[in-house]
Amino acid sequence: MTVDLTGLVIASGGELRQPVAAAVSSTFTADHDAATLTDLAHLDASNLHFGGDFTANISWLSADNATSDEWVYLDLGAEFTIGEVRIWNYHEVVGADFETSGRSVKGYELFVAGTGASLPVDPSETPFAAGGGWVSASGPGDLAIGPPTANEGVPLLAATDALAVSMMGVRYIGIDIRSRHAPDQFTTTAVGLAQIQVVLGVVPFEITSIVRNSATDEVVITFNSASEGFYAIDATNSLLPQGEAGGWLELSDFEGQGASTTICVIPPDGISSCPRIHIY
Image (tube, rainbow, N blue to C red; front, side, top):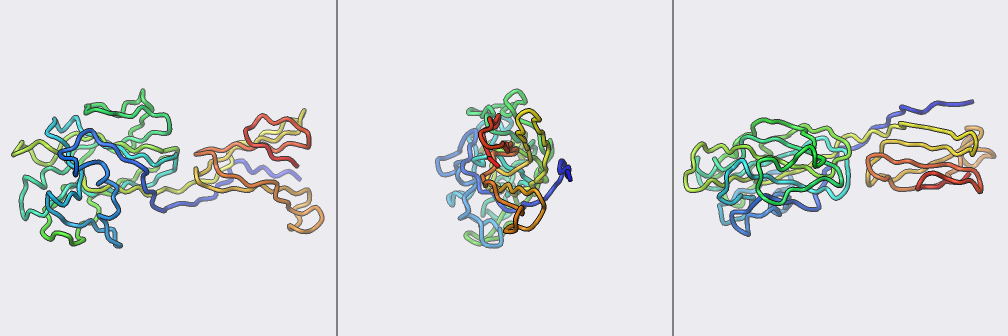
């Protein structure tokens, strides 16, 4: 009996992924740097962002550049399927002061890229170019303003935006900043964000290809996978339970190679065309 499993889909996912690094176009002071964007110490157990004044260093704030030249990006460390990007916009303990809440990002576009993308270094109006491996995933649009907050050290601000971003093979997430909520310069043209959080999406375990080489009996299987997923391949001639004669037998287990994994099953002394070799 032959069973065609091509197209079989099993879903999983939904947990948070903490970025391994963040980068920004510029900083207002050394204390308002990229690290603040992913610092979990600024969130309480209910995912509320703590209030604080300018000196509390709870938000990233850019230098006094043209707002449209600013950007931020996160590095997830490997490629993942993502489902949502949560953003806490810039806020300060200042009372009803539009000047400081106006520093929060308004116009934006969110881009994603895989490993090998061209990463920006300096302020630029086009930091995430398609030629550098980047793809637009949300926007252009506007983010909600970060409200003035009144209680320093108190968890009080939920995510101001939750962007649905369902994309596979994502390692880098970039936000191209187009404008800020304050229409005028006031004392500075700086723009900022408080926190960014990444929620992994549903990783479809889908067998996308099964190819058998009739000359060598090699079977090449390709499937969608997760970078940190752990998989096993079993085989049987009878579909009987494991432990019975001719029943299911585990050939090998292995980690996923990224968004897609290819494995080869070959007979004894066979030659494999795949980086992973499993012998039956």
